[in-house]
Amino acid sequence: MPPAWPFVVEVKVPWRDLDGAGHVNNAVYFSYFEQARTEWYLQARGLGPRVQDLDIILARTSCDFRSQASMGETLQVLMWPGKVGTTSFGLRYEIREKRSQRLVAEGESVQVAFDYAKNEKKPVPDSIRAALSGARPPG
Image (cartoon, rainbow, N blue to C red; front, side):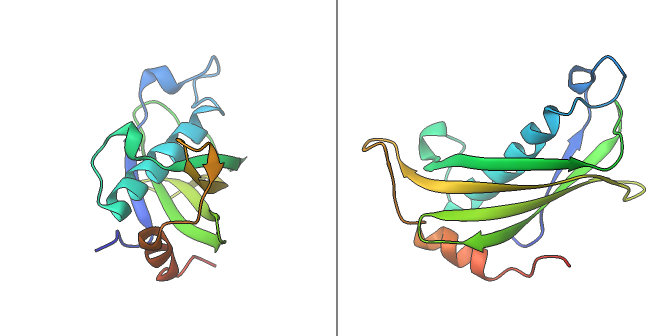
């Protein structure tokens, strides 16, 4: 059974994620998106945590920063599907501070199903298409 929507991953902010101003560095939010995306994809495909099982490639990503996050806070990365095409699919993200539910960041990404052996895009796998189709995104 595919993971439920929204798919949620929790991250306790470590010291290494901070910048000189003492809050999470802007580039780190993309790693939080990646963590959620990768965990969801492997679960939806029923695969183990092996890099060779990832047959997607990131085509685009964006992030809008809404508030600062600091060391020791627990963040929830919530993820919903976006548009699904023939060879690509979108994902939408919210990052919230767990205790207060304060919105920290929002983002999107587009993934392309990719055959690394042939170095070309391929159709989105049926298991992923099915997992994405049953969702009700926020808003």
